[in-house]
Amino acid sequence: MKNKLTYLAVFFGLSLLATAPTALGQGRGRSNDGGDKKNIFKINMISPLVRTGSVFYERAITERSSAQLGFFYTGFSIAETRYRGFGITPEYRFYLSQSKSAPQGFFVAPYARYQNVELSLTVNEVERARLTGFGGGVVVGGQWIFSDIVSLDVFAGPSFTARNISYEGGAIEQDFNFTGFSNVGLRFGVTLGLAF
Image 1 (tube, rainbow, N blue to C red):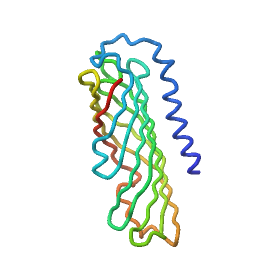
Image 2 (tube, one colour):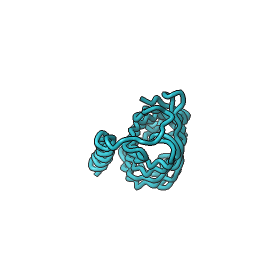
Image 3 (cartoon, one colour):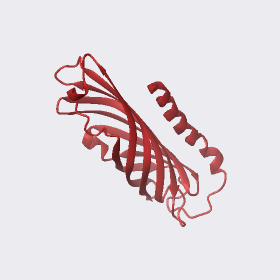
Image 4 (cartoon, rainbow, N blue to C red):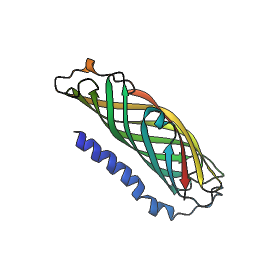
């Protein structure tokens, strides 16, 4: 089951990005203070606070939309629980500005997310758990391009995740701290990036 979810998330993200070259041929008539920048590579500046690396690639598809693919890797501990894992987040952004072209301005963005995290006890590495989750949500935010190269992106919104947890080595649910891995949560971030 988890392999199917991984393939589904990767396929969805790659499908969105694969449509970009065709859709971009439709023209970009509105002004774009960031020049004619269609691509942005970004890093979430909040993620390091929880020992997580989070990167994104966004590509404008039309004047008012873009596709983004995000990846995160985490490795942190809370109490006696150690977390190690990754996640993939494909996202489609609808830009609302009438005067600026994507990828600038205010946006609404539905997204999907797959995550795969291994939990282990810091005092006994034999007892482990594997958390896999597939879900999504909607974020709202704004993105600006400064000096024709530096991007600032701020976003927030609800997230919903169906998760599955499997245990190894005699572990049970009460052994682990699942802080931050509830079925309903909040996704937010502040990214800095390079537009090209």
